[in-house]
Structures are given as C-alpha cells and as structure tokens.
Length: 153
Image 1: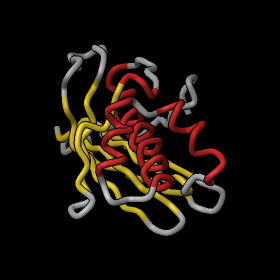
Image 2: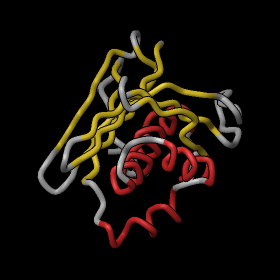
Image 3: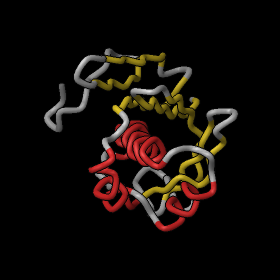
C-alpha cells in the first residue's frame, strides 16, 4: 500500500480493488493492455439515506437523468455513487489528484446495454480535460451495484 493508502501493483501491472461487508473484488491487467482500471461495488443504499447520498454526489443533470430512466431511485443513487468511486480509482493513479463527487457526472446511461459515460467537470493533471467523456459499465442486482472503468493503453 502507498502512503495515500492506494494499492501498489507489481511492475508492469495496473489494478483496482473494492470491498463491501461481505465481498472483495480485484481487477488486474497488464500495463501494456490498459493504462488504468477502476472498479467498485456498493450495497443498494437504504431509503433513509437516499437524499443524503443524492446531495453528496448527484448533479442536477444526474437528477434529471435519474428521473428519466426506468430504474428505482435507490438503485440509481447507489449506481451514481459507485460510478464516481470507480471513475476516481481509474483516474487517480494517472493524475495523483484527489477529486470529489461534484467533479464528474454521469453523461449518459443505458440500462439495457448496462453502459454509462462519465463526463469530467474539471481539468486534471496528465492531460485529462474538463468535458472529456469516458465509457464505463455497470451491473445491478437486488443487493448491489457494480461499476467499472478502464482506459486502454
């Protein structure tokens, strides 16, 4: 583990970890294939914490998107939180910059294909620019949401 508590991978590899109370997930790839990857798993939030999570991590555009798709509020809020976590885990190793939930937003969301796009809302180091869009994937179960982003080499 690095001083900032991020995982340290063997030479020539990139990876990401996630965990919940009863699940541990790891994704590892060769650096020659991927610049970076980020994964996250989150329990579906409880109804009483939905407003708090929405306030913490959801933009007005994301609220509009949530209201336009056929997915329940708790699942979408959990998905938004998880997508931003996995997006951060993907970009942080390349930029070394801590950014928060309001610095990126879900730009598009396709529940049928289980794909989403994340739009960066600020410039970061290493050439990542405001407005840049990144593709990701997600899965939802009754208990959890899973999200992932990967940047090809």
